[in-house]
Length: 410
Image (cartoon, rainbow, N blue to C red; front, top):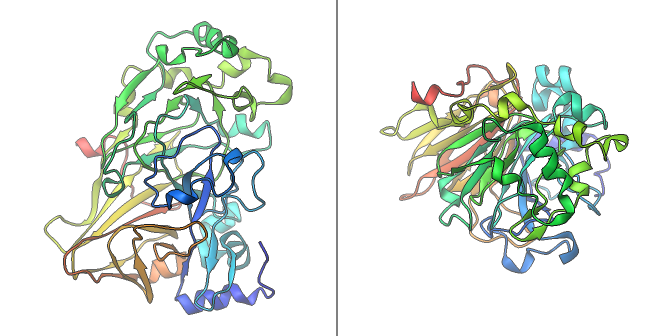
């Protein structure tokens, strides 16, 4: 996209918004999936990128990460800031220009960028069984690893799609030879890798933490997905819902000299974690109250949390403000926020959950909260007399005092 001419526009936008930046919707298609039609994108625009690109089944939130799609547009996946004066520029460029003010000194000094993003993904059926490489594995092709977390927002899951179950990992006792044989049968139709996996029924209002190297075939609930800022993957399932999965999706993030090395590809899997008989207890999460209560005019809940290999990578909260109520958000880190129900105000910006969005249309439901504003406190108000105002906001690895997986049951 064309850039605003002066770098001072970033500072001006921050001043105008008092540390808040309004973002336009960022739509991403996937050629190998079928949209679930719950993103509120008008049905006439589901194939706005062209039928050859596939349907739009993802909306990326406060993203500075490019989508690694075939035939992608130049800035695909990147969020755009829209100022009160109508100027437009990439969130990525604003972070690069304003650094610490935007994302805080810890993230800026370590990464020099906003290293995470979140998305809604929304599919009619399941996604093929796949994994995301570890940092070391992804580095072999000049990429970064991608752990991720899931939360299933109740407000966006009035319908559950065709298969509201997710296969995670592999059954205990599964051998490398069995999975290698599945990969060797890629062009013989369904390679039957799901014969070795276990499906879990998905429940709105719950979630999962998914480390790198864990096989998973996400089901058909609309999913809120905070994750590391990478789009690296390796598909292990040759057919899904009767549709072929291109072999290129198995090897796209594998070193070129290893594309035919099935032993190397099988070893992308973390075998101990995938075949653990207590897999659910180590990955399943439910909301935990961080502030307020169900009986107060607000409640702020952790909905994605936990450490991966001992490191905190990302987390997310769901804030509910009751009709006529208000709450002051005070976080020790920047966040990307999106509204899932209701309308009101955050800081000096109006916010509203749209009912229908045309491709290219501006909305009032997505905000970037800078580290500077988060530390000072941002007031959010519910202007409805009847309906709750519900928002989701996600954070990077600099947030402290987050729960651990399993804490919801303690």
